[in-house]
Image (cartoon, rainbow over the protein chains, first blue to last red):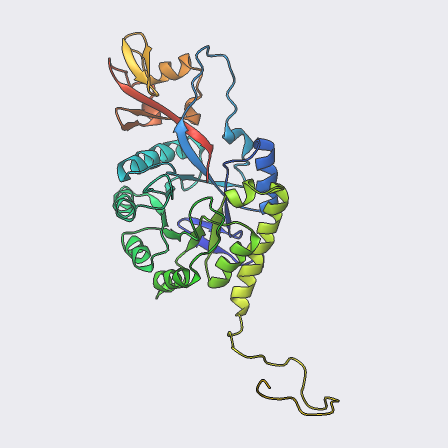
Length: 281
Length: 66
């Protein structure tokens, strides 16, 4: 599988996991999880810098704990509930990436959220912000509901990638509507099979990642599924296996679902006293 | 003069530049992005951009997130 590459904007990756950097016990645990997951893309959030009043404390920055030679940083606009705030966060992120010398610093994971209870995307604000950021030359990876029609509108608005949710952020409910994800994939990849679709949010355990990949997603973005596990590093390793397994199964092609059994062993030559019934007695 | 820095009132000398403000706070310029009154201040202009009375300044950095 080492040559199975895909593109998102100006980048090419082999790992199909995007991993968030939030909620770990400490930076050391985060680093070990990122290593175990084999990810090449990590998400970060943009926030007010903590300014010390005595000007002496050395602040511990996440940037000191990320191997920027190996990892590409994808800033998000998490916590933004209006298109305006998300656009501000994206512009700050672009400046920050520029300072890091991160290549292709113009990408952003756009989140415009509707409310704190569900953290579901606000579809209208999301579309508005996508349009504005595309106009401002960003590569926009847009977090979306799993509505195929909205996903298509976001692509039409110029999103570099559309990222339909499996279930609400941090909920661990997995892929709640595989049929919708399949429709999203069908619509987004129609006549454009290389268009990257990343399933984002809701992963609870490794099999959720596998299901997303089996449906034909190009990748999966997750954070809490690893950071919140009892053993985050072991779960990160499981996620690396899961994404590979799902991708391979997708490429291999699953068998169709059938109502009845199909024997794997030949029926001829069975040693039996009577022929089996074809219908229940 | 009085400015609002990351939501807090702060007194800085007149004619302070963005670069000087960051230096006062021991902030490495490459590690932050700066906004004045909701407009990005490009990094290359930090040395020249003079802060005005009442400016709302945001100094932002990356933190862990998903």
